[in-house]
Structure formats: structure tokens, C-alpha cells
Image (cartoon, rainbow, N blue to C red):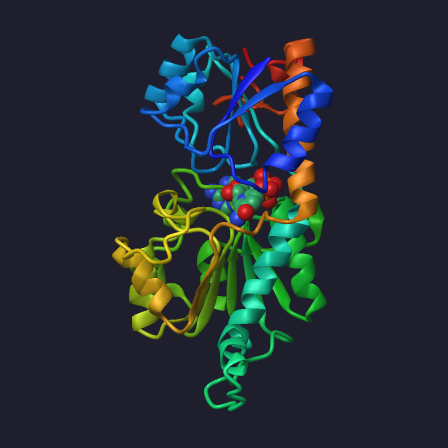
Length: 343
Ligand code: NAD
């Protein structure tokens, strides 16, 4: 099977190349992203393998289908970049539902600790032999309240890590797991009580800008916002407003609403054209990493193994437990449970 592998990065190659040989798959690695102008690169391929910022919108789905592509293998969990309702009946969509919730949750905590203990500032100072402590006063996590939005795989690991620090954990989830022992509260209560808010829900129409302009007045003054989930959960302009008002004490961002234009590329030496991102990065209390929370050896290995096994399983059996469709969330209408495939 020929597979067009879009948005390929050097760190993807070792694990995928090793597994492809064993599985008889022929990956064609393209550094460019999938989008309307690049879909034609998939000519002659039965499948495409894509990542978080590839564009599999309706127009692209139609182009891929016209080229004979019958499978989209996402090498990530989130699928907000795929028009799965347009793909239905044409192209099967598989994803990697979980690869290492620990990697993402640990990165969220790393960002939080870096921010509140000013490690990023101290690191730069000490490299210049400046050991002054002025301006480096932090605060302890012990005894503070963390509000976790989305208590799935990653949110729960993050909650466990926070408990290890002696924090009080409260949570909001659209589908709360009452047997989990987690204290679920309404979103407004979470906003009002949390010293730290960490986002771990998927990006959907409902969660788009879950932190927005109207949220600001509900937040506790000085709250630290951590986002390792998807950029558009936060309205970046509202975040800047909250920081300027001193309502938001700090922000730790591994994802950014307009990240697809900048993340995963080296813009050092260039003029940053995204003013919002430039302003965020210029703030002393904002830390940005470029969608790196997943980037551990363990996660990369696990992503490659599941992606290849999804493709091989689908070739062999015509089905995969990791298939997605727009009806999958509605158990009664999705046929995967009864027929093993969404269509
Ligand atoms: P998951 O599916 O296990 O958990 C998501 C949770 O969000 C579920 O408990 C679900 O009920 C809840 N949820 C759904 N809709 C909601 C809503 N409207 N409001 C509140 N909660 C809602 O997913 P996961 O594996 O924990 O991943 C969480 C997110 O992390 C993914 O959606 C993805 O966007 C992101 N992610 C980021 C990286 C990274 O490198 N930064 C890596 C992997 C995943």
C-alpha cells in the first residue's frame, strides 16, 4: 500500500521507516502539509497519513477521494482538522486515540512549574552569571486549587500529578465520570475557584473559545491558564486583554489558535507577522512551546506503532477499532459497534 505522509518531520522518520518495512507499507514522506494545493501529491496512494495541522477540510476530502484515496490515517488523537462528515461514505478516517497521556500531562506540569517558579527567567540570568533573585518570586502549588477542563486520558493524569503536589483538584467535563472520585463542578464555579486552570478537552463548536472575553470577569484574579490541548479553546486576544487587566496572572501555552501558520517551522531571523503571537511571547508571564507536549521517545514510538497497526489492520480486515465518523459520538447511530466499521 502506498501512503502519502504529509507534514513529515525528522523526528517522525526513524519509527515510521522501521515499522513500514516490516509491514510492507510504502510511505512517501512529504514535508509539506496536506491542503487544497498539495492534495495532488497523494496521486497513486490509497492512503494519506496526516498530523494536527494538515488540512483535511471538505474540499481536500473531495480531491483525495477523486485521486483514489480511501483511508486517512491520523497520527494524532485530535481530528478537528478533518471534515469527518464529508469523509463519511467515501474515506475511512482512523486516529491514534491514546499514545502517551503522561507525555502531554507532564509537559503541562513542566510549563506550569516553569512559569510560576520563573525558571525561564532564571535560566537566562544564570547563563549570564546574573544570580540576582529580584523579580523571581514565585508561589507554591501545595494547597492551591486546580480546575481541570476535560477529564479524559490526559486530564486525569494531569489531575493525579496535581494531587501529588498537594493541590485541590476540581473539574468540569461535559460527560463527567461520577465513579472517578473527581469533584465535578459547573464551568462557572471552576472559573471562580481555580488558581490554575488546565485545558484537556477536545476542540469542538462547544469548546471553541471556552476561555473568551466573557470568561474574564468570572476568573479568580491571578489565575494561571495552561493549554496543551488545542489553540482555539482560548481566544488569544481575550487572553491578552486578561493579562493586561492583571486578571490572568500567567499563561502557559503549548498550542495557539493560529499555530498552523507558524508552529513546527524555524522563523528565527524572520519578522514575525502574527502580531497576536508576538505580543503574547513578549509578555513576561507567558510561556509558549510549539505544540511539543507529545514529543517524547515513548509517544513517538507509540504513535508510529498504532498508526501502522491501524493501516495494516484496515488493509487486512477492512475495519479498525480506531475508525472515526461524525456519528461515532452518538452510540445509537454509529454502526461500528455492530458491523466493526462506520460505513
Ligand atoms: P480524551 O478523549 O481522552 O478526553 C477528552 C475529555 O474531554 C473527555 O473526558 C470528554 O468527555 C471531555 N469533553 C468533551 N467535550 C467536552 C466539553 N464540551 N466540555 C468539557 N469537556 C469535554 O482526550 P485526551 O487524550 O485526554 O486528549 C485531550 C486533548 O489533548 C485532545 O483533544 C487533543 O486536542 C489534545 N492533545 C494535545 C497534544 C499536544 O501535543 N499538545 C497531544 C495529544 C492530545
